[in-house]
Every structure is written in structure tokens, then in C-alpha cells.
Length: 381
Image 1 (cartoon, rainbow, N blue to C red):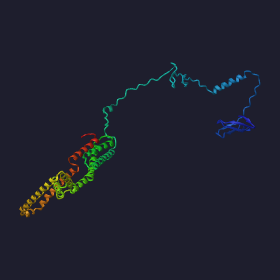
Image 2: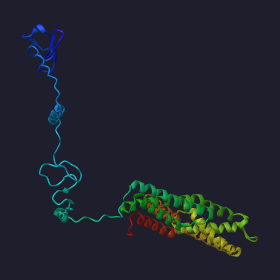
Image 3: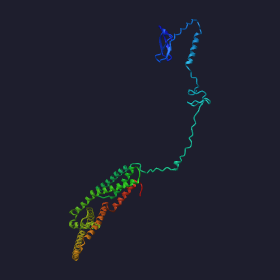
Image 4: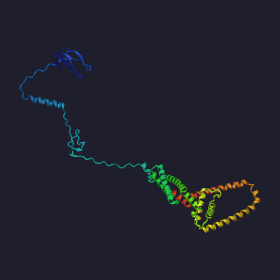
């Protein structure tokens, strides 16, 4: 505590420096900071002034005392350190954990590589051998393959149509190109082979071949047939000594024969049957000379006259049995209905046969389906 201008200073245990009047010595006071109650004591008397003497070693004593106090307050770190990297080492340590310096051998210790032990055998995986990954299996989407198959197959159908359009020749074997493109499209889209893709490519091929064939028949072949039939009856295709009526008669006769061969109804043939028969008849008549046409007309007239005479005699001979035959109309109608069904079935077969281009067209269709399946599935059977 220090005295200044009638006041004394009191230091509380909490470190708070308080001021009190000098007359309050011996009394108790409460610290406003921590609440501790302390007794105010009188400040100690000042130390007597030292006599001034001429001491030549006084400065040395003062310096020694200062160094002693500094040694107490400032502790010097005298722990052992690594001579290599300067890192502090524990007492009695012989190896630096920072750089690996060994105080005993005066050299750096290098760590030896740790040898890995033998791998542990997985008995569970050893029992079940791994299956080889099928590199030919599809890696892509089936729908992507289907879309690409339709697109490339349509390109093949367009090629077939354009070739027929510009050449006026029906290249039926181009249907095989449709199958090959459809199979290749399925393979590229699904990025591999699959039997499902093969069957889908076959379906796409059949549909596109049917549509392309329909376009070829409607846009190319039918106009060709009509043009041939119309020009056959005109004078442009007739020779100077040829009768157009005789030529037309022979064409009609040959067309009737073709309809009979097809099993078609001569009274009500279908349009496709009539066109197919007309093409064959026109082709035959074009190869005949005017003399051959004339002879054929005479032969047909004679045959027609003989047939008419025979029919008249038959009608006279069977006139008496007309009433008895008319008594069973139900049997006749049922027989005619069955015959019509057979004729209709045969007519459809003939139409399909002619539509596909005959036997060669059917063979090409089978080859197109096989090419599509092989291209998409990777198998030949």
C-alpha cells in the first residue's frame, strides 16, 4: 500500500487496487469487485536511504543480481536435440523420430520395405467359378435396335421401289437387301446379338417387303399392264395386214385359259387375277405372227361352234329331266357354296403367289427373312 495526498492504496486479493482515506486504518472494507472483506492496514514506512559510498564493485553486484532474477523468470530449454535436423529429443532417446538419425551409429536409419504376406484364399469364390462374359450379348436398348432396324429396312424398300420405277423391271431379289439392312440395324441399335432381336428383325422385314411390294405393284406394274392392254387393241401394235379384232379375240381367249388355270371364277374374277391373266395373254400374243393369229381365230371359231352344237344336243337330251333336277335346290346350293369357298381359297393363294412375284419372289422373301434373323441374332438356324 502506498500513501498519496491523505489517501492510502489497498490491494485486494482479486488484484483490484482500492483507495481509502488515511484515517480508515484498522477498519474493515468490502471490495466492490469481488465482495471480499479486508482490513485496511497502514502502509509500511519507507526504507532508509543508503549512504552514498564509493564502492567500485557495486555495479558488478547489481548485474549478478539481475542475471539471477532473469534466470528464475526466463527458463532456458536445455533438452537434447537431434544434431541432424534440430528436433527436440526426449531424455535418453537415441533415435530421432523426425529424420531417423541414430545417435549411436551417427548415421541415418533407412526403413526396410515391409513384405506383403500371402493373399488370403477365398474358399467361397473358389467353389463357384466365374462365368465368362458374353461379348456378343446385347449391350444397348432393344427399342433403339428396333427403331434402327425399321429405318434401315425402309431405306432398302425405297431402293427397291426407285430401281423398279426408273428401269421398269421388277427386281424381286432386292427384297433380300431389306432383310440384310433390317438385321444390321437391329444389331447396331442393341449393340450385340439376341434371338429376340432376330425375330423382331424378321417381323420388320416381312412388313417392309409387303409394303414395298405393294408400292411397286400399284405404282409401276399396274400402269404397265394397263398400258400394254390398251396399246394391244390399237393400231400402233398391229401389223399392216393384222386385224385388231382378231388379236383382241386371241388375247381374250388366252386370258380365259389363264383364269381357268388359276381356278378363278370366269364370270366374276378378281381384279388381280384378271390383270395377271392379261399380262400372260399379252406376252403370248406379242410373239405370234399375223398368220398365226388368223389361224388361232379360225380354230377358236370352229371350237366355239362345235361347243355350241354339243350344248344344244345336250340340252335337248336332258330337257325331260329338268323338273326332277329342280326338286333338290338345297343340295345344289350347298354344293355350289362349298365349291365357291374352295375357289376363293385357291384364288387368294394365286393372288398372293402372283403378288410376291411367283416362286422366285417367295424364295427371295424366305432369303430376306433368313438374312434379317442371322444379322440380328448371329446364328444361322
